[in-house]
Length: 300
Image (tube, rainbow, N blue to C red):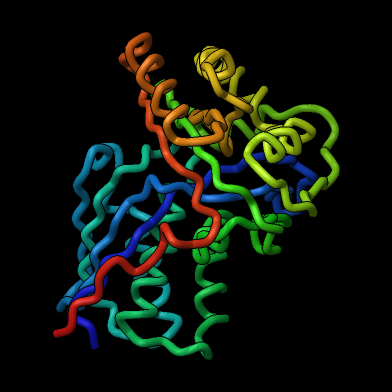
C-alpha cells in the first residue's frame, strides 16, 4: 500500500447553467456545461491511526475543519468499502470558499480518487465511488472525473462533451458572501429548457458564441443578493480580449473567457490595480481531467 497520495482538486466552472425544474424533495434539476481549471487545491492523503484533517493555504481560515466535505468523503468511503477509517488528510486550500467554483466538492472528489489509489480499489468499486460522491453533494460526481461534461438532473446524469478548444479564463470574486440556498430561493419565473452543446467548437471564439445563446439562470438572483457581482461582470466584459463574461454556479465568482492566458493575465493586472479588494486569478481551462491527476504516490 502507498504511504501517501498527493492529488489535485481543480476548481470547476459552470460555463452555462439552466435551472430546468424542481423535484418534490426540493432539489433543483439543472442543465449545465461544466469544465475545470488549472487552479486547484491539493490534498495529501496517508494512512493513520485515527482520522484527521489539517488545512493550510490562502483560504484555510474560511473553512470549518470540524465539518469538512473532504473528511466526510473519507469517512463515507471507508464505511461503504469496509476500509479502516484512519486517514490523515492535509489540504492546501487555494480555491475560494463558497464561491461558485465547487471547491468543497472538488476536495471531496479528490479524497475519493486518492483513497481509491491508496486502498487499491479495483473497477468493481466504481459504483461505490459514484454512490458516495452523489451522497456528498450535487457537484461531487462531476468533480470525481474532473472532465468537461454536460450535467443534468441534480448532478447525477453526466454525459461527455464533444472536444472543447483550449482557452483561458480570468476568475474574479468581489469577496461578498453569496449563500447558495438563498440564491435558489430567490429565483423566480419559469424553468428553462435543456439546451446542451452537441457540436465541437473550433476555438475559444466559437465556444463563446455557443455560450452566448445560453445563460446562468442564477445570475439575477445572485446579483439581487450581492450587487457587487454586477460590477464584476461589467468590469470583465470591458476588458480587452474578453469573449464572454459570466457568473459561475450560484456565485459570487465570475469569469471572463479569453483566447489565451496572456490576454487573461493582462486583464487580471488591470482589474487587480483598479479593485485591490477583489480576488483576481488568471487560469487555463482543463477539459481532459489532467488537473485532477494523482500528483505523487510514495511507497511505504
